[in-house]
Image 1 (cartoon, rainbow, N blue to C red):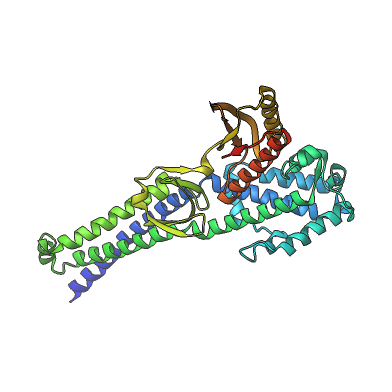
Image 2: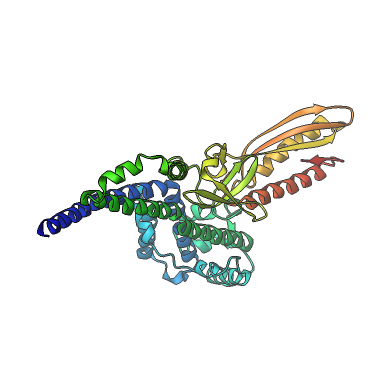
Length: 408
């Protein structure tokens, strides 16, 4: 009896030692994979979000509070925000408290709340005068060095040196949407690691129980004969396929990591937004908000184009005009297109390509290639920007008296 008790205690302690070693190894692996999953783009987006939130706080700060000492604090905070990537880990502990918190209370932006914040900003800086926020107004809350960077955030403000209510509204809505996307990312990004943790935990418990069973010597011979027989072929086949799916999920979601939550991707010539990334499957959203599920093992065989990680996205337009249009008018059209692109540097780059493709007795076909100045987390924003350019281009063609034109 004493021999059995000693053997039982020894086997149990040995099992605990083995399980503890495997548990520590599991924690190490999960931490490494978790850091790999939270890549640099995530911390960069969080840094930009905090920077924009602080700018909004500055716009709402009473002008009488601005002085040299407060400006040194502003500079110190902005310097911290723009710090090295290693310090970006501190941003996970940062709480964002601004008026934009109210905008996150619902899935859609509340127009009344936006109008209220805009009214507060204009009341603070312009005393409710019917005009935009000028550089002289911004000098009351910041120094000249920071005004240029702030104006670049608002559409058209860099050229007019004034922030209009429309551009402020657009910036606030964009800020709110980006923050919602960041919060959604924080809620969903741990799905892969959590699922992997559950799988490893089940395996560790099974291996620990098996190790204790073998150390105790309970039916060791019969157990070895059983696992060498054909009775476990089906179980091995099922378990093997499951392990294969897990390995493929790790390969796609963590090792390759071709996309993040909220990224806009093209898969099988269809534009999809990443909704959630799991260990077994990934969920996408179509343009009509239909949710689509696809196994990670299938995605490994697909060609995935991530628009959010692509630099200098372009848009192509085919312009059909009458073949009787004079060369002088065509030359003026090229200049107008160049002016149109340069007038909106927040949306488009000035470099473009305008070439003739086909000309016949009736129509002349031109190809216009322009480049987006920013990346897109929202496909609808890209479509709206393209639609806005088509409308402005149509206005230019009408001003030049070009009849029967078509833009595709």
